[in-house]
Length: 160
Image 1 (cartoon, rainbow, N blue to C red):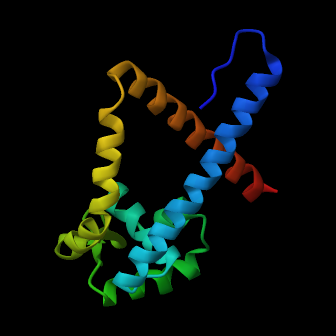
Image 2: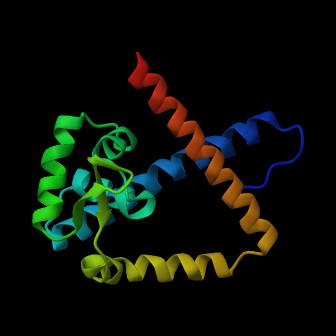
């Protein structure tokens, strides 16, 4: 990583471009990791993405999962069918609205995925251990803002 002196616009632009390039490379590496994990679990990329959303934010209605994933509700039916058949999720009647359905992740198979991701999780713990709390706070803030920028760009494209 380069250091930038105050007022050096060219160096700042170079560093900003380096960060953006590194984020793209990180996205690629994580996509390849997810494909390897998905292949071992016999899940395709979009099914894994939806399972992750349900695991982190569930229980959710099928339409809420579709909205969060940016998918058509009809597409979601097939995804949920596959995840349910494979024992990853369960559809249940919504206790607040008996006509509604919620989807929740089943804990029985979560250990399989955690085991496959243990190496990456351990590596991330090691990386974070090399930073101070203040530095981690800056990194966490940067990532939160980058996530919001991505969400905004996605919503803008989806609306056009």
